[in-house]
Length: 402
Image (cartoon, rainbow, N blue to C red; front, side, top):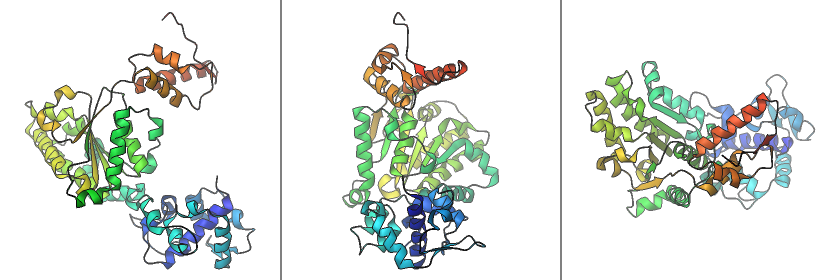
């Protein structure tokens, strides 16, 4: 855990350096440091380090108290501004305590101390989550794109999650070897998309996740967005039959426009079998028009050109027609977990629980046919049952005759 005085000094140094260098932009600021300074979708200079902005940026409850004992600090009681009386002394104090890896997590300071330490500004910037992935930017963009009359419909059709809102990580998910391989490939494709474009390899970055409900399709899409620091734009395809039929096709187009504007991002389209179902039925003409717009938009979006990773998902692959299948370059299967995977899921879900005589392999053998979602539900019910009995320690005792 970072010392409070170090965290506050680092923040104040960052604001000072950022204000001085016109060659830096919001993508150079660490995401937590941007948070206090968003206003109507922009971050404007100068940044002012105050007690309140320091608290928001660093999580230190009493920023001024944390650094008030240092010889080079000052504080304005009226404005709340935190200042350095001796900038060079503050920088030296910071450099005496900061490892190179720490400095390289902050592109502003990496640029500032590139000549003094073994750090690289470009590398630091490349590894920093871009400002357009921040919730504040996303919310402002959505307000610009959709007026109040369209808001209800778009909330039905689209859910946009900023990386900071996604708590689930890939470490929380048990993956098959195939799933791990496909995720690794797509991560590398995103990292090297400029190279792929230069050699003309553009037909990549459209995945279809196939498997029963509860096997982790949505969770993997969100966790991948969290890992890559990208917004996740989720389209609820079944909601395409909303009451605003005449506007649905237009809003499908807007969804793709938003994804391209938020790029790089992940566009996750769930219930993709709805496409084939609609094309083969006598659905309302407006719905068919919206589905055709969706398919056309999928054809036109590209990971390499638009920096949009498209992931479709279906629980019913048998209902997809050839027109749906051919729009994806990779199919990723999500089977129900086998016994070793169920044991691993149980370990992950229970890692913060106190369980007496825990035997995940035995429990895995007793839960054949259950998905990861099922296992989480079973464990949740067990915890709630224990709480009703005023117990906070679980037991995995079970009847072996079942």
